[in-house]
Length: 86
Image (cartoon, rainbow, N blue to C red):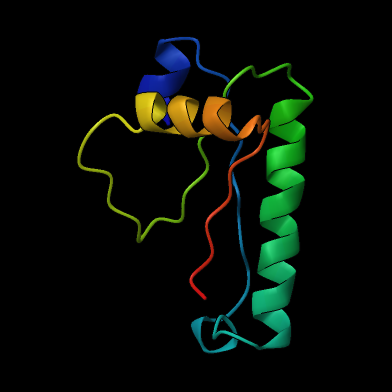
């Protein structure tokens, strides 16, 4: 975070007091975490972010995904691209 602030990148901390045992898929805490992430994305978009890539910490990105995402957004006329584990 300090490096991002030094580079004048607007940062928002997402603190959680949820116990690890409550973070399991399908639990009440997991659902609350999803709503918190959604609220974080909304806060970022309200800062007039033109592009936003939001990924879970356990996602690995091996190269710049933006060209791929822009291509598929243009191909489908989409403003929003989403991924599901299902």
